[in-house]
Length: 537
Image (tube, rainbow, N blue to C red; front, side):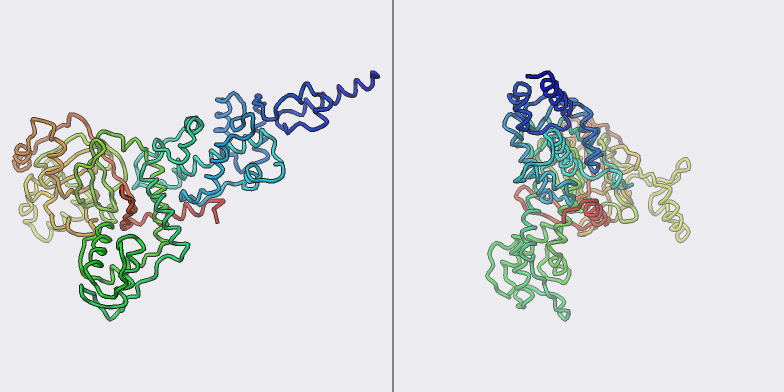
């Protein structure tokens, strides 16, 4: 072989080697022909380290993924700048599972699409060879994972949902740890209870059902006759048949006899519907009931989606606590859980629209029996002083007194805090307490307070909290509550208290409940979810 030919061959080899790992593709026939020892015996999917600058080149080519760049760099540094998604046979099976999740992300209540659909379809479903190099393919799948993790596990940017009424700390997600865990156990992609609350998955199951109902046109409207005030058992009407058909679609009526007569079977279904959705059961069919039944499947889907989003923000470890107290504002209910079981449920009264109860977490630390009520200055100025001007005896009649410049109400049955309060110190001065206004707990819509939470079963709550403390028998609790002298008790073990805002809830049997959006939060959140860039059409 002539020296010139030798120099030519080595020059070609040098050029090929200098092409760089950033542009690595399947070895061409020429590469295997002239350098069989260098390229021909190396598997095209071999996991050789790549130059870290290849990541920079990738984002120059795909700038709409730029926000993931720092996270991607950390991930590949952890993997020693080797490919993550390839083995000796090509892309690992988990990559295909992830792709399926991303292209069907609307099933997770997400309306945003991956910004480079053509590229990922080309990787996983393209009939022709993808224009991406193997390194670019690996980077693209890693970005696809981060997109999915952000949308499903983390939720929208906290800045977009910042609100003075939502003070509960957002869940922190480590994408590196998450990637490690799903790589080791791909089944976590289907259900990951360590990252998402079980309630999220229950809502997702119902979302699937409601989307199927939406595909077939949803349910027919109940056409109320404006000349009719209500229907009672025994009445007949086409409206009654419409309600019967409607309740069958949502499972409240298990068998449909297609009768237009209001019989006991329909009455039972109506009671079930009302109880399930936080209503006071009643036999009369009213226009109000018809209006509720006429809320469309599409609107119910919106409610499900926004509540799935809220659960993305909540740390699942909350449910793993030995005991905790949870208040759901829209359902006006308190739940006390211990060892995974609900040990007490109680109706509550929450803040009215002008004095919203905030969403936050705290630790129940004190129980105060026969409490004073130190009246906030805002209430003194807006309510008490005008009342005094109308009635000079107002303070005496309501057992109020001035103490060091602070107006307070004396302990007793007339006290606005009732006979006991439960304190979890916080900057919003929110706490749980008894109330002398017992009739309010019978109302469906219980938003009447100045922001604190009134408990319908305060004695039961105190007894349940202290039942393992021999110093606090039910009799001693009753004596302290009715003693007329303020008495503080510091809990030996603090109990987490979580105030939440969920307008949809699915029980263990898969039945969904919808509650009034009492503070009108759902529509704004849904708009944020839908109007982000790259929405799924």
